[in-house]
Figure 1 (cartoon, rainbow, N blue to C red):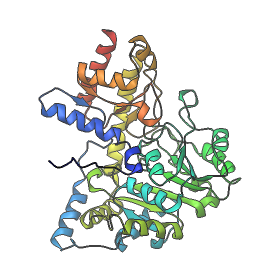
Figure 2: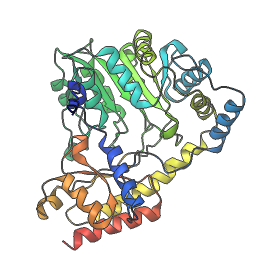
Figure 3: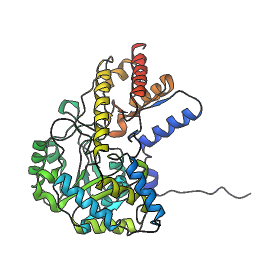
Figure 4: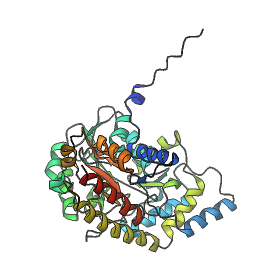
Length: 399
C-alpha cells in the first residue's frame, strides 16, 4: 500500500487568508442553491448591468477578430483612453508609457507591491482597510502597518497618525478614498495635510486607490492626493479601474498611472504572471472611458438614494451606531453593543447568526481591521434592502 502523499505548502500559501468578501458571497450562493431564502449584502459589485454601448463594443471587437494577445501593458488605444481620462477627470498628465492596464484593480496593487516592496519593507495601510491590502503586502514580503481610524474621527486617518506610522523602513503609504469598507472620503484639506507629512519622507511612495471615484456625494468634488499636492506626482501611483464605475466587475480591467520606471517594473511583473488583460475586455473598457458618462451618474444617484434609506434604517436599530457615508455603496455600522448584549463572541459569530437565523449575508468588520462592525453593501435593489434590513431589525428586537 502506497504511503499517502505528504503535501507541504509554501510558507506564504500557508499564511495567506482567502478573501472574506468572496467567501461570504460564495456561502450565500451555496445556501440559495439549497433552496434557502437568503438576501446577500456582501457583494462588492454594482447590481446594474454593464451599459449596452460597452457590451456592443466588446461584440464588435470579437467580430473584428480582436481575440489575440495584446501588448502586456494593454492596447495602445486603451492606454490613450486612460491618459485622456486622467487628464479630463483629474487634471493629471501622463504618457502612455506611464500607464499599465491589468486584470482588475487587485492585480494593479499586486503588481505594485511586487515591483517596489522588498522583504521587511513596511507599508502603511490605514484601518479600516480593503481586505486584500495587508495580504498582498505580505505576499511581497512586506510588513503592513495598520493605524486605526475609528468612528470618533470619521474613519479617516489624521496627519499625526500618518506621521507616527512612518518609520525608516516605510516604503509605501496607501490611501483609499472613497473607502471600501467605510464609504468615507478624504477632503481636500485633509489630503493637503497628508502632503505636508509625506514631504518629510521623500523616499516613501504613495498609492492612491480611486476605484470608487465616481460614487461620492459629500459635497466636495472628488480629489486624490496628487491632484491637491502636484509636487508628489513623481512618487505617486494612481490606481483605478472600470469594475465599479461601469458595472464591469467580471470584465476584470484595472489601470494604473505613475512614474514610468515603476510602471515598467509593474509591467514586467505582469508579463511573468498573467500577461495581457483580456483583449475583448480592453475593447469594452476603451468604450467605457471614451463614451458618454451618464450611465455612471445614474448609478451614483441610485446608490445615494439607497444610502439614505440604509443609513436611516440602521440608525433606527437598537444598539447600532452608524455614520453617514460620503460615497461608495457600503454602510459600515458598529454592532459592538449588539454583540455585547447578545453575549456573542465577536462580529464573525454575529454574521453567522444573521445568515443562519434570518437569511441575511453581510461581512464581518474584523476582515477590514475593524472588529465589532459589519459591512453592508447596498448595491442591490431597494426591495432586497428593505427585506434584509427588516430582518436584521427584527432579529435585534426579538433578542
